[in-house]
Image: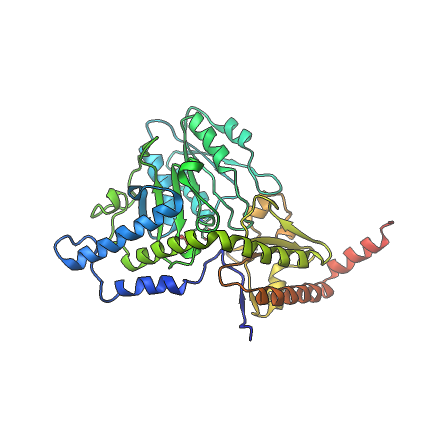
Length: 400
Ligand SMILES: Cc1ncc(COP(=O)(O)O)c(C=O)c1O
C-alpha cells in the first residue's frame, strides 16, 4: 500500500539514508569522544572518524582532505566564504559579483557586506534562469575580489556554466565561490575540473543528517585566504572554531561515499520519473515548466499552473503530497519566489508555481499517484476560479 503523503520536496531536505544512520550511531554512545582530545583513545577514535569522513567528502568533489572545512551547514559555509573572503581581500578591492537567483544564504550575506562597505553586482538571468558569461565578464572591475554563482538552483534545478565562469574568473584573477548545495551528490561536481575556489554544501541535501556541511577552500593555484568568522579553539585549521559534530560528520562522510557510488544510476532513474511527471502534467491546459530543459538537475521540476494559486493547490492536495511553492512568508503576505520573478514571471504566474523534487526513495508508484492527485486538484481548483472561466472564454472565442 502506498504511504501518504508522498514526499516530493527533496530539495528542502532529504531523509537520512538508513546506512548513514548506522554509520553515525556509534559516535553518539560508545565512541562519544571529542575529536580535539589529544590525550586519550576516546579523542583519538573520534578524530579518526572525522579524518575518514574528511576523506569521503573530499573524494566526492575531487578535493584534498585539507581543503575541507566542516561547518554546521551550507548557510554557515556561504557566510564563511563570502565574509571571510571580503575581509581577507580588503586590500585588493571591495567588489563582489553574484546573481539575482541565488539562495538567501548568499543574497542576505551580500546585503550584510554592503553595509560593511562592499559593492555588490547582482547579475540578471534569462527566462530560463541562466546567466550570461559575457555579461559576467563585463561586470568585472579592478576592484572585484570574487564571483558567487550557485552551481544549481534550488527552485528550478538550473545548472549554471561553472567551468566557463571559472575560466573568466581565472583570466581576471578573481576568486570563484559557488553554493553547490543542490548539486553535490546529485551530479558530478569536481573542484579541479570546474576550477572552483570556494564551495559550500550540506549533508542534509544528500541523504545525510541536518546541521552539518562543509566549505571547500582551495589550497593551491591559488591558495585562498579567509578570515574566520567564529573565534575560539582554532578547530578546522583555525577557520571554524567549535567542537566538531562527530556523529554528524561521520554521517556526512558516509552520505558522500554513497552518493559517489550511486549517483550514476540514481540520476537517470530520477530523470525518467521526473520526465514522466512533467509530461503528464503538461497535458493539462496552460501549464509551463520553469527553468532550462537541458541544463537542469535530473530530479527537479518547477511548474506553473496558470490561473491557479499555489496556496489553493496545496489546500486541494489535502496533505497527500509534499511539494514546495518557493514562496516565503514575510509578515502577513506571501511573497512570490524571487527566483521565478528574476526569470521574468509575473507575480500571478510565480504564485501559480510548484516545485517537485524527487529523491532516492521516490518510487514509480508514487509518481503515478502524484500525477493523478495533481491533475485532479488543478482541474478542481480551476473549476472554482473566475479567472479560469474568463481564460477559457477567450480561448474558445479566439479564431483558429
Ligand atoms: C542552494 C542552497 N544554499 C543553501 C542552503 C542552506 O543550507 P543549510 O540548510 O545546510 O544551511 C540551501 C537549503 O535550503 C540551498 O538550497
